Image (cartoon, rainbow, N blue to C red; front, top):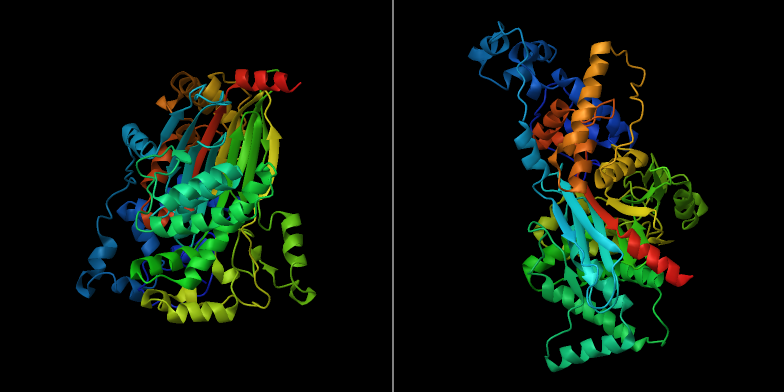
Length: 559
């Protein structure tokens, strides 16, 4: 089994003519990908940092010798000329100490801070008092290119702010499209009938449009200019239908979020079926439809917080208790095999005869880990429609093993939906922040640790708990070192100016004692692209900080 091209989420058999890159002593990464999920990634994560001698990329020559001896000599002979084979095996055998190459702290900081972004929200924007102080966001890639995306925008024609993280699989095309388009669909869904009419009349007469969103973007967060006209036309068709369906009732936020998610997914599917005369756009819409993405989006308007989630990214609320300690409140539920209600939902949507095949090995049809996602038309279209679109599509699509592969036991599609689960929460003064993150974070850290680390970072107050050694035998000298390190950490806070960066530093660099180990962090960030994905996933985080004074005032007005 190998995974192509989204190792964490989709596992399908493919043929490969590529030469082996690893010896038998070290399994190829693709053989390990299907095993890396949830708690299993943690075990592998620990292994890479504390057993660095396991991999040839980290070995000194004499250790590499010991590993290579375990491999069949025929395979080694293909790596180097026959006459130099013995010299290769015995080269530099006099080295007795492993050579270690670590990134310096400035190099580590440069990598961690490359994609960080911060935005401070004005307390009064001319229309409303905001319950958000600001937000920090950051991304750390594991895939090349990164398959995660993020978005943040202020709604200009209605109230509130939108923030979201998007986790792509089978490529980044779908996550990119959703990150560009979903907020527009949500904003349009929230607009009153009069504003929709005003926008449509402006388009008809060629006048300038009212701006709907103010985006807050990192320079690396780009928009696809080539597809902007196509995307606009689909969005316009949507608001025209909303105008025709006008009921005169006030728009419900939960209903608007659900409608926007479903409509965008439907448009992604329709655009791929219709195609485009422009060959570049035709290939683009097909790539978007055949790849997939999960989404976790928050809409904050005063004290009203709505979280719409499709897939296995998460939203976690950080609550400060009366004694100053921190607790985590879950505002989303994973849509995967760890959620019994999701398994039940999927089974009920298909005949009894498919009960044992619809979820196999904790995956949808034995292949897909999230049970809800945008795109992924291989799990939504009929077999006949898939074959027709592929056969009439460009050669790149026709030659792709993944797109031509039909899932096993594929009898009653669709098996997948993009409909979100929406949770509404009334903010309270003790609700200090919200963490939105893709599952690359949650696979490595417990929710309580995430909230505690962010809470202590934002307040500067560190509640010292007894150092837990987790069953390890620790000498007095080691304990003194841990205490010294903790004191240094409190005084410096690792010079992070961004809460999301600080959280990523912990997610990647924490050791078994819960403290950031620079050596471990350096090793994880030094891994080459082909190995990084074996030990962690892309990580994307948005930390939203609430204004407790505004929240408290709004709460008093409600009473």
